[in-house]
Length: 199
Image (cartoon, rainbow, N blue to C red; front, side, top):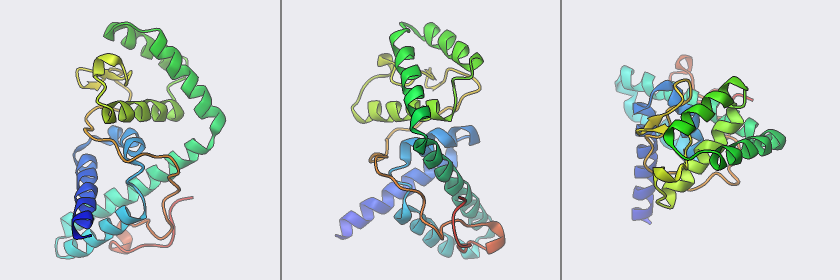
């Protein structure tokens, strides 16, 4: 039991470090990849870290800011997932993308076309990030074009999120419900829960 708890806490700390070292534009796709981990126990762990960091205002402020943004992104992620029509349409766009490319140059050209057509929306990015996470979980190589944004380990489309730095997908996002209420923190609250997450 002790080993299981330690493993879980280490996993949460690894997820936190991913967000802490990622650029702001990388966060949305990272949320998609790690949504399975971003549940009530994760946010409870973050609150425990806040208690430990209460004597370190700078560290506390960073944790509060991270927690607040993660809650908002998780809420948005779940909202997008509930729109089954958009997700289905995005899946078709992604499927068409994979069937029409043979090289990195093709990826860049196709992504530029999709961007101009307004098809690179939150639903498409979630589909892409999920596929990439699944590919990493099954040891597929980048040459198999699991993530259409990848170019040299970074996002091939300059305006898109650079989510290719993750090295371990979450346990899966199927059935992942919304972020529990009471988890939204703000700097004004000094790291304390302020009631409920953004709805």
